[in-house]
Each structure stands twice: as structure tokens, then as C-alpha cells.
Length: 81
Image (tube, rainbow, N blue to C red; front, side, top):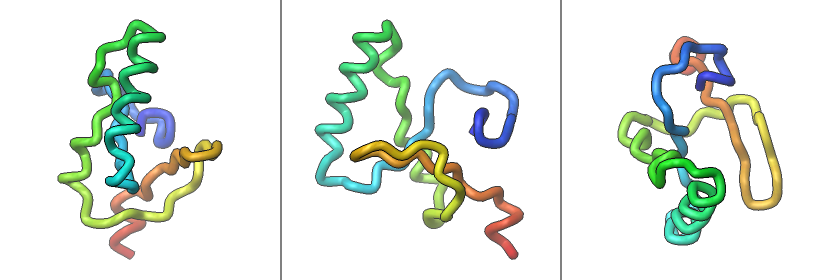
């Protein structure tokens, strides 16, 4: 959100929505590996934001590589139109 909307830095983690629940264990292993390699805390990727979502918005893709799509959500004002 900070990068996508040029917002102020408010937290030290990355909010994520993991759309393949059957792969959640694999994702958590990758998150741990990245944390170890970068010296980051294990909870740098936060999937707890899913509790605040009503659905998935089709915002612009910021990064797409095999197995990962980073997509910015639409602003709330766009979702209400």
C-alpha cells in the first residue's frame, strides 16, 4: 500500500492475501526462508489483512513472476462506484 498509493509508512510488514490456501504451508516456508536470508522478523509477511477484505479487487499488477502476482487493491472510492 505504501508503494502503490505513495502512502506514509505505517507498519513494518507486508500485507498479503494468499489465494491458494492449499499452498499456505509452502508460502510460510518461503516467508521464513526470506526472513532468515534478509535478517527480517518471521512475521514480515502478514496475511491477517484478509479479515478486512470484502472481496478481491482487480487493481493494477505491480509484479508478476512465476507463482507470484503482486497486485495493488483499488482504492475504496473505486470499489463503491
